[in-house]
Amino acid sequence: MDTIRRDKAAADNKTRPGPPEASDFLGLDTLLSREERAIRDETRVFVEERLKPNIKEWWEKAIFPKEIVPEMGSLGLLGMHLSGYGCAGKSAVSYGLACMELEAGDSGLRTFVSVQGSLAMSAIHKFGSEEQKQEWLPRMAKGEAIGCFGLTEPDAGSDPASMKTSARRDGPDWVLNGSKRWIGMATIADVAVVWAQTDEGIRGFLVPTDTPGFSATNIINKLSMRASVQCDLLFEDVRLPESAMLPGAEGLKGPFACLNEARYGIIWGAMGAARDCYETALQYSKEREQFGKPIAGFQLTQQKLVNMMLEINKGVMVALHIGRMKDEGTAHPSHISFGKLNNVREAIEIAREARTILGGNGVTNDYPVLRHANNLESVMTYEGTSEVHTLILGSAITGVQAFR
Image (cartoon, rainbow, N blue to C red; front, top):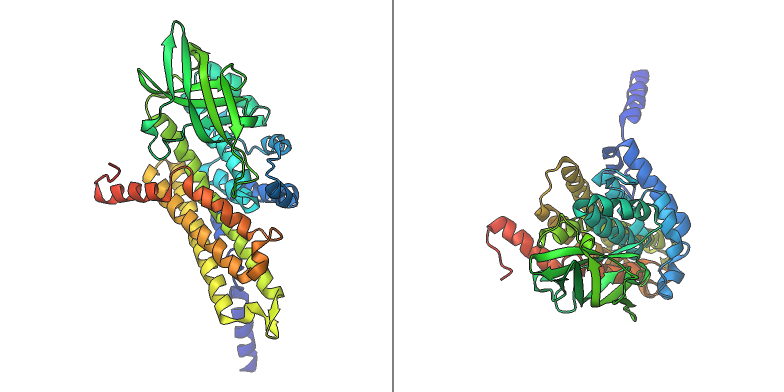
């Protein structure tokens, strides 16, 4: 009888699952393909080796490290979800996983990949002529040329239909006048995708940044996204040939299609920032002792950590499901709004809660938590504010639009 009990206990031990991992409690890795995990892991190594050791200084000094752009290109991170023209042609899920790892380093560095690939390159890939694609996309995929995306204006953020930038025909040319604001990477860009009002409606133009009349100025004194570049643009009688127009984009459907690509990356990226805050707080709680024991042993600390873990696992599941839908062609723009609204909102709360576990140390740049929190304030605003995404979802479920 004792032998039977011992054999049964041994069998039970073989089949009993081990304890969940703190950073992947639900074992979501098992839902990824071998290629997806490889892309995720390669990007994670890049972030650990090249970004995290330097991000404290870059953020403090408001430096965007332009030298890493070719490295990102060599990893296939630039326009990685696009096909042809030197782009990697990877799945939406693979791109999302890369965004998650990049934003675990810093939102500003993920933003560069988003501006380059999801906005500028995507606009050219979706709406450009064959000549435009051949001229720009291979170099942009390698990181040899940088692009920016000029849509938002000083008085037209959430309502781009009210943009005042205009392009008028003058003989065989177009003449561009106006201004844009909060344009990522413009002062280091080689080409700007600029959206303007014309007699034919809103159209997109490719503007080389050395074109006379084009100027870009960095927005300084930012308390967020300091390792990134945001700019004001000014167009003063910028003369462009007919070939500068993106032939396939008419109206706001063009820029909105690109914004949807960028919003998708944010769904994943926000969870990367949240995960980095959670892991930092978890490790700190095990090392920091008060009242004779690590603060990880106190009930309120465990409650905070558990709530973070729950929301990160749920947020990654949302991102993964929307990514699979995107790869299948079944994702609606309102699904992207669902992910962006939920995951950024939860990521900010996780960052703030993680800061409380770190106490006073959490407000220093010795730890990444408050840097992530500050960055996420910008992420919550750009590519559609929380209010805008709330109303997109409200319209989707009621059938009634509340914008006007």
